[in-house]
Length: 284
Image 1 (tube, rainbow, N blue to C red):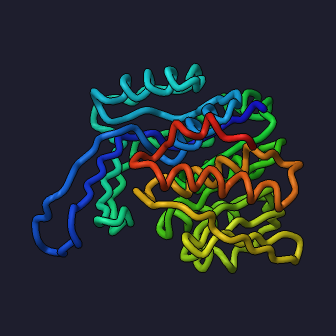
Image 2 (cartoon, rainbow, N blue to C red; image 1 turned 90 degrees about the vertical axis):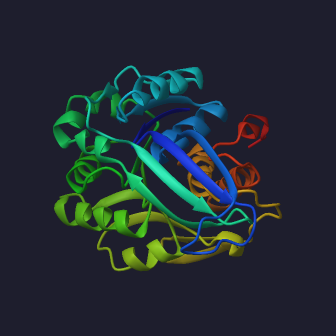
């Protein structure tokens, strides 16, 4: 399947304590640097699953930008229509995990992605609509999300990213004329922030961590248990979940898409990295 992913790409700096994390203190632990970003992670996951992936972003982070782009190409992601931003723009995410791999908190500096404007997207809209499915995430500004809602001709999947960023989806719907799209993926907290959104959304996928996945579609609610796993890091789990859902395809049943998403999410949380290479061995 050919999929267009639009979103952020950044440097992930993940710190994990070796014992129970103590707030306000220096904690012994390990720090890893890897390539991340919600959009980039989803694109990487989808490429590992065997899809043809077109990624649209503006790479930032100074000296890191060409390195991240090269890493995307090495992963089988097409970056032909991306750009590299000038100095002074950043794409960094710093995460702090406790000893069990659970995210305590993080800081995202994604101002490079603000350059993905409606005008920037309009120059690429034919490319976007040539895909079988379109994925966008809330690191994009509300105006750009609204543009995609109104101009996407193929099934559009939106990722809420975080409580703070999910407000952009609500604003985008208010700005849009169409006010409808195929699927929304969020976690339980983001869902509360978006519950009152006035939009026609065919499927809402609500990740509940260890409690599994809930799907709302056409007035019905479906619940699926989380798969047994040993958690090493929850960073990237939500990105993998949506990747599996998208990989299953817009024509997949609720059950098929949920199964694919949960399988990919398990791979992600069992890995210390945001993207697990084990995805390419999954049969979904």
